[in-house]
Image 1 (cartoon, rainbow, N blue to C red):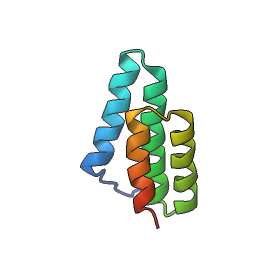
Image 2 (image 1 turned 90 degrees about the vertical axis):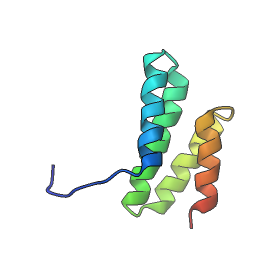
Image 3 (image 1 turned 60 degrees about the vertical axis):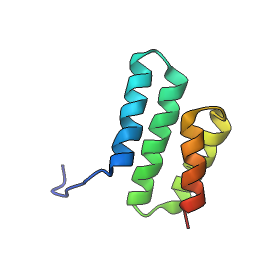
Image 4 (image 1 turned 120 degrees about the horizontal axis):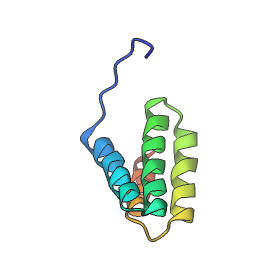
Length: 80
């Protein structure tokens, strides 16, 4: 788009793919949670750690029992 290349890490691609599968199954809440993970990953890539942390925290609050919330908690532990 702007001449820059982006290479997604396998975990990022897996999170996005999980969200698509959930959406296709009609599991909208799980899909939204998965897309929240993807958004947080983009924010980290943009070096906006504060926004990524907020996105992950919001995800955990909104979807506490989801697999995405579990992953979000792991990511929160790794953010500086």
